[in-house]
Image (cartoon, rainbow, N blue to C red):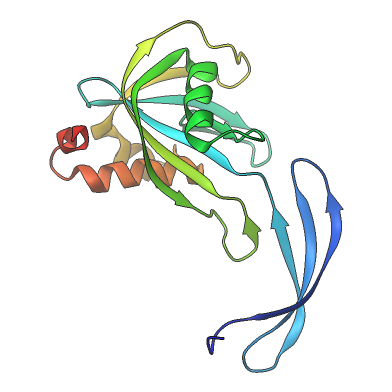
Length: 187
């Protein structure tokens, strides 16, 4: 065992539903301190940065989130259904929420949004190119969607208009990869 690893002596459930599990863990720190620590589990999610064919614009949805009571730009995404692969969820959610189908879908990164207390893997994909295949079947997901210039993303983030952790991680990841030109993402 590593010198900085916490020891979990026991776990107990406080609340469980299909959407969330809340529990307490009896933990011991390397220095011998022992206490109860909250732990939260939520289902895994998948989301996609969908770029247009020329790699100049990203498809974003303007959404209201009632818990923090804020509006922000987000990418299409959602919870992974039982038996579904994250890439299948990403493709399904794009089509359901926007009516587009990506021409190519690549895994970018998987991250945990609050790793100290929450287990909820977020699988982020990059979609390159899109074909309009219909209207969104999810009518309550957003107020509107727009193909936003990729060059505008840093200003939207700085203005607090991208607040969702999955969207932030994904968009910043694409911007970091793109450097002076996002064209390298085609390879």
